[in-house]
Length: 147
Length: 375
Image (cartoon, rainbow over all chains, first blue to last red; front, side, top):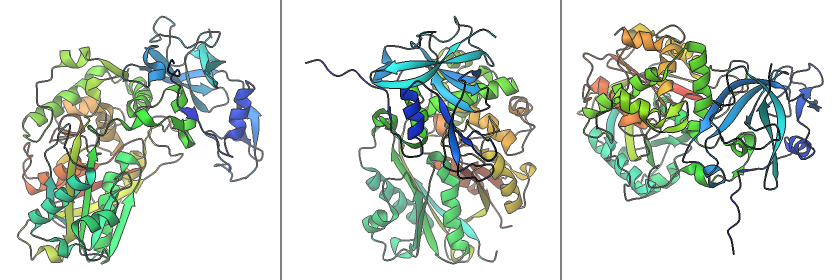
């Protein structure tokens, strides 16, 4: 009997975050937005931290943005990534102004085994949303695109 | 404030990779040693404070060492951010007259007990948006901040290397320190990556350690055969949009809660950076030392490398700190801060009146000033 393949840490949604993961399952990136003042609220919270309205509405974002920072992971890491290093984790600033974390993937959404040099990874580089599958877990990820 | 808190006892067990006992056991031994150092006994203890991450609660520790009654107890959260806030809690209890002898300790088997992130396979809360993408180790979260700072301030890897090398030199004078081999810039720059731009020597050590302190009132300390070290003042700060380690989502990318602690600290202590003779800056990672110099107001934003090179900066992390002495969630920095005021550091700075000690950056945190004289 072969051992089960290692998994990444599994997201555990609660009532305040479940719509995000439901969106991800349908390959839609949705974020709470305040229905009163328009503030994007990331990470998700039930109250608008700017105007205290309690009616955020899950709203689709473009997924386009720029690289705000990144790291390149090296050993020791969790078993799921151990034979796919180095890999890049991005901090992406979406055009809507919020920042999200995701891995650097190719145009098809496959994790790149790279330190980003060959791909021209740089602060401020443009990225676009892709979807990455990891066993039964779907995750947003980003690929580098030209300006 | 009429009642003043003072530190009268210190003790630490030898740091190691495997201390060979539970954190309950090592913590109890550290506490008993600190009471002995103060000339006090368990019968005097009526207060106990700990980090939330301390696995042994105050109740359990009081039971282990046989405290008759705790009149005050409490814990502070947020990992390495908890050091100064825990000391602040103990000091407040004394200042308010809620307790007379308060024990504070941190024991942690962070080496033999394994890496906590290895088993964290379910990602709840903030983690659900980070861990599945690979931000799992503390270094991963710090690496993203570090690149922001490098980009914003022009910091180079050599600037971080200088921090690691300086602290290694301090550790070489400290027989308790775990890492005492020479460290050169060549070795630093060629060491393996962990999470770029952080390499092995940018990371703190993985240590089994147990340290404790005893605080009491200035008045009670007069009966003891020790030179008290005054808690001159302290402050806490969360900043806006708080997260643990991944302070990425607010309006001020690259700013940490220390920026919010600092003005409160200088107001509460009546001091300014110029008054500080020596600092112990939280150093789970080298860049935090550079950041702390400007966030606490010692130099202009981003100027720490030049400020340190100028010789004007107060010396930092004189025991070797988390990078080279031991990593016990910053509690060893607090102990070293008291030693500097006592005059018993192995890298003693001349005529220390005030030592600043800070706790973890990029988490809600705090800072404290230990002084030779009361305010």
